[in-house]
Image (cartoon, rainbow, N blue to C red; front, side, top):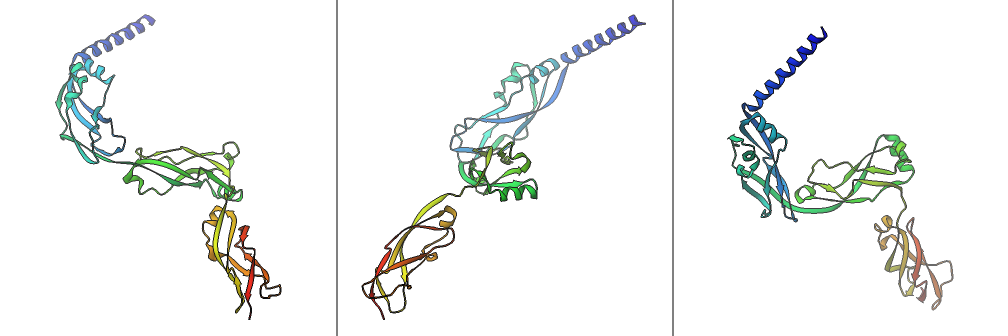
Length: 296
């Protein structure tokens, strides 16, 4: 019984070998889809679109030769060395695919189109803000209460100018407060278009430390009582504060006036008091005192 079983297995194996031998020597017709690839694209330009992206053909050859071809498929390459901005038409020349000739394969049906249209755009780059997203409300609350932020706050992106003009920000993957202690990094949401690349794939989550800067405001008018004349009648001040605050204020947000708590007499020196917006610190002022020139 056991001997009979092995005889059946051997017979089945021999049948497969014979079938394969017949099949690989038989002539077949096969439909192929060949991807289009590009080379030597100019540095200042980038392909915006390739139409079509593949070439469909029908070939004829023995099963053996088709198997050999499939083992080392190749793309149809287009050299963009002389490409210019805008539309570029490249005639399809299947004779460039020497692999068919090498494996004795015959092209029966060529593609229905004669040219490949490649639209080139200017290569561009710009910086856009990184906007964090959150896994849930609890993670968002944790992020805000702990004064967390992303670093860097802006990331450079590169790609076709046409596509970059409509991108105003990029987002992170959802922030999860449970992962923060073990991994203070968070990945950026990948671009849906492979033509657009990011300078970084992730950013750090850090505690926000406001940047303190200094700024000078000149010729700030000094307020006086009606009929009182002083010299000089304006003051220059140097202040410090968070960059975001100082960038959004002007000299109109400050008030300078003489100290009316002291007696006012002609030729006397009176202190100039400066009233500052919240969060702003006075570093220096010139002058600190003014002389009374005239009183009612």
